[in-house]
Length: 260
Image 1 (cartoon, rainbow, N blue to C red):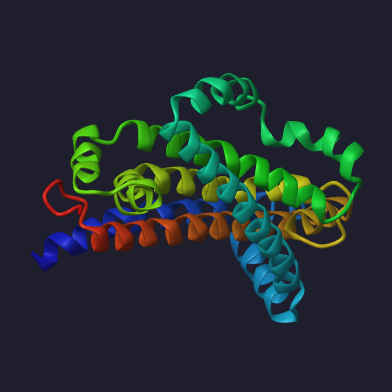
Image 2: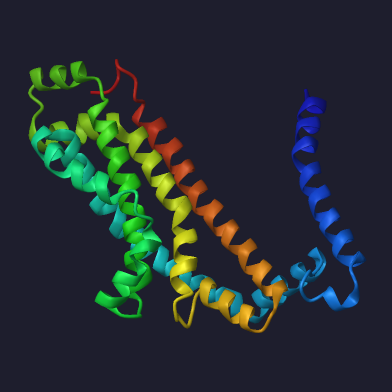
């Protein structure tokens, strides 16, 4: 059994090791004058460590993280509340669904020029873009989750006296939690991809700002380092919600005979 698990782990790790080894070998074999444009993996690793130890990377990460958290919280609060109203009331759904369906295909970054006119260049810009990005997946998944719950369970709850806020918090929302968490994971995974582009628009701090500064200095090693950090932050942020989802759903025990 242990041998089988070890073999599976080897299959997972080996491609990654081969990728980094190939990267190192290919870049080392290039002419010296191309070294700055195609840095080997070890050079990127050393530069990442230097940026972290000097505090430069941590400072920029902190700014990006604060913007992501603020924008994400604003987006999901409006997304969950709007999705709940659309899923719960058919009249609200018929009124809002055409508008949201019309706006949803617009990429969040497509709003940047308009937001620059309305809000100017400041903290409100990246936060607003992240909020817009987070709103739509959360809203749609919340709406779908509520519309797809078993209506027989809602009728049973109502027959037992549940209504209003009690019905919503004790029955409807718990049953819709899997879909709500799916929307949260979709939003969280893309939040860092959105903030990186928004920060490139004249923001002095943040991973996007550091990327633009590195590009102006032709520091490809710093650019790749920032991309690695960005990828890691995005994955970790999404994993947090995945773990939270498993814990909450485990505690809720969402089975038909134990939901009340």
